[in-house]
Image (cartoon, rainbow, N blue to C red; front, side, top):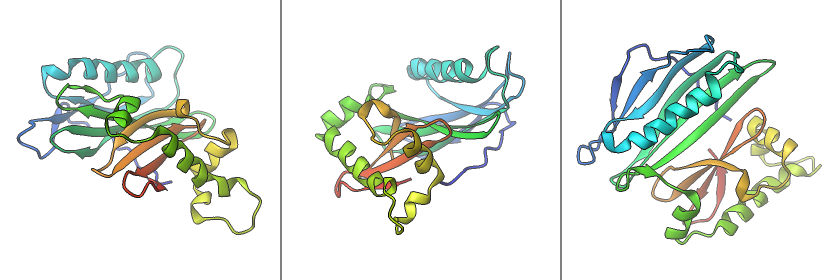
Length: 214
């Protein structure tokens, strides 16, 4: 698993251009100004344009509900990253590191439709693209199966800390275990599954139907 160092952005409302002038979409970096958890720091994204008001409200609610309340006073650092954009879709992640008795690293992924200005639903997206949920789950479980054995020689990816943490708590992945997803390219879908310490991210290639870790 590759850990990203999350560096707070101290320039309020700095605009990161996505590079697609026709869609005129931007991610705006907003500094976190905590109300309750004074150990909360970093920045989160908002999307420019009144048409994304619903999505932006959802992002703010995610930050405040999970990190800035009277019950959560753990050191928490939040950042974000644009993952993909074309004329139809914008994908990005909110990445956060929580430090209490141990370090925990998670990613919440977003995939937005730039035509409806709403978050994409994974089940509906797969249905529209004629992609089988069954095949994705089957291939993810086949991918992790060797890591559950006691064989001496295991695939290199079995040493990934996030994957190890996932299979310690979950021997088989179900569709309900998927916490969020994103579009990585025209051919790749990212599937995020949270465990108690990490988000494990699987990449499913639509053409080859193969699974890899992000």
